[in-house]
Every structure is written in C-alpha cells, then in structure tokens.
Amino acid sequence: MELRDNFHRVIDYMRISITDRCNLRCIYCMPSGGVRPIEHREILSYEEIARVVKVAAALGVRKVRITGGEPLARKNVSFLVSSLKGIPGIEDMSLTTNGILLEKYARELSGAGLDRVNVSLDSLRPQRYREITRGGEIGFVMRGIEAAEDVGLTPVKMNMVPIRGMNDGEIEEFARMTLSTPRHVRFIEFMPIGARELWSDDRYISSDETRAVVEKIGALSPVRARKNGPAKYFRFAGAPGVVGFISALTHHFCADCNRLRLTADGKLRPCLFSETEIDLKPALRNSRSDAELERLLRLSIDVKPEGHNISRRADLESLKTMSKIGG
Ligand code: SAM
Ligand code: SF4
Image (cartoon, rainbow, N blue to C red; front, side):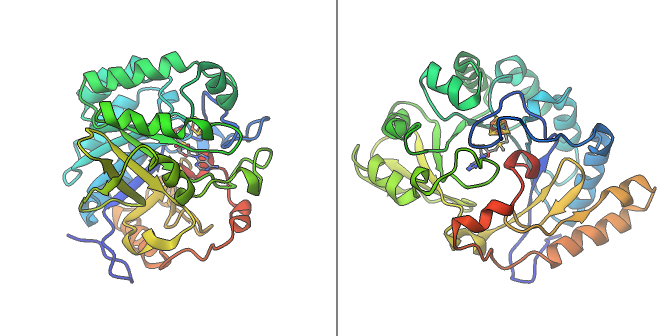
C-alpha cells in the first residue's frame, strides 16, 4: 500500500510530537515566560498514538520520528518506541532530542528498537550553551551523544541553528567535527517562530551564508541519498561525517515533502507552515472505528498543500512555537 497525495508525492513519514513540555527554554524557541502547556488530559496517550500509527502504517507510512517539546521529558518513551516498532510496516524509528536525558535512556531506547537520534546543540561552549538554553548543562548532552554512539543509535545527527551575534562564530568548529567523526552536522536556518524576543532580521543567517563559512575549510561535494527530506547534504573530501543545510524558506523541498505531523494533542498537520489541522482526538476518544481514523488520515493527505506560500520571514510570525507544533 502506498499513500499518494494530489501532487504525486508518496507520504510515508510521520513526525509525532509526544509532549509540548520541555526541560530547557531555548531562547530562539520559547519565550522567557514559557508557553502555556497543553492540559494533560488533552495529550494523546501512548495507546492512542499507537492506534494512529497502526492505521497510518496500513496506509503506507513506513518511518516515524518522535519529537516534542522534549520527548525524553515524558515518562517511559521506550515503551512507546517498542510498541510503534512492533507495528507491521514501520521500518524506521528515530527521535529528536535536546540530549539532556540521552545518556540515561540511550541503551533502553536502542533496546526498544529505536534506530537513530537527532540531537539539538547550538554551542560547544558551556557558558554560551547555558545562556542559549536558559540553564542547560552541555556535559549531559555530550555524554548523551557518546552514549547514543556507543549503543548504535547512529549516525547521530546534530542540529545547530546559527544566529548572528550568538553562536555564528562556531559554525566552522561544528563543521570541522565531520572531519574526524561520522556525525552529521546540520545547520538549520533560524525562523521567526516562537522567539519574538530574540528575532530580528539582522540575526537571521541564510543557509548560503552559513555554507560560505563552512566552505572556507575546504570544498564540499554533494552526498547523494534517495530521500534527503528538507536537508541538502555534503561532505569534505575523505571526511567520515556529513554537513547538511536546512533552509525553511526556500521552496526547494516542498516537491519532495513526504511527511505528516501529529501534534501532542492529536491533530494531524499536513504542512509545518500551514495552520490547517485535522483533529483525530474526537474519533480516538468517542470509540469510533479505525475506518474513521483512516478517513481522517486520507483527508489530511487530501488537503496537504503543494507548497507553502511563505516568501517573507515575517509571514512565519503568526505560527505557533516549534515546541507546540513538534519540531
Ligand atoms: N526538544 C527537542 C530538540 O530540541 O531537539 C525536539 C523539539 S525542537 C522544537 C526541534 C528542533 O526545532 C530543534 O532542532 C530546534 O533547534 C528547532 N527549532 C526550534 N525553534 C526554532 C526556530 N525558531 N528556528 C529554527 N529552528 C528551531
Ligand atoms: Fe526545548 Fe527543543 Fe525548544 Fe530547546 S528547541 S526549548 S530543547 S523544544
């Protein structure tokens, strides 16, 4: 079974936010006062998430990523991983985390069937890391990455958001990591989502500008992969690791978009940049059949836009924070 949208794209990937809560407060993601959390009873249970994934897998979804908020801040994520991995059709399970609790859970997650992790890390300097995350300790993250590598949750992909005047001086250092380790270092363009206090046009650094800094180290050759999603990947000659660039605002990846998002409170969001959401919770909680869930899943594919119309960064400002949507 293959799920195709109206623009001939195969939809086989679901990103699932399991919580909007977080144990950090990154200054580019959350306002200093935090965001009002979704009430606990509105958050999908693991059983409800598994039911959605079972129906989605029967339709053709093959890959699942667990995210948040901070997914490892929710209890017993390994239980969810093993139940999702056990669903026929699910071939690939990954998780995006800030890494603070990764050392504690890496082995258990791997044992439960997790394949890989993405770790967000925006500075290699302890004091700057503390400032960016409003209190995080980088030692936990570095030990988390090592633990993930030890148990085979690889390749570890590191997400870094370069912001002018904050961590832009570290772009080269991050890229150099790929010369000596098999890590994937991905530079994500800063978006004006959720970070009103920090955002300004001057702080934004385009992927092209980041790439120009990285290329001072040496020439980059494209890495071919069947599906790269929104990232463009490159490698320095002979390097074990990979450098990636993710630009939210250029349209180049809409044509290859293969994903659906499920928010922590049970809404299917066909496009990150559109407020259109389809609420699965009534069907999940009013003992409706799986056929009704299937209808809603198909509906969300039907309304998946061909591309986002955002050409100006200011257009993003009305969107919810990434911690709410599920980054
Ligand atoms: N807490 C986990 C983490 O930090 O990896 C998962 C959720 S977080 C919302 C997912 C990703 O969204 C992170 O890599 C983070 O850097 C990115 N993100 C959050 N706010 C962003 C913004 N305003 N611009 C660009 N990326 C952002
Ligand atoms: Fe939390 Fe991730 Fe947002 Fe940082 S980027 S505040 S770790 S959800």
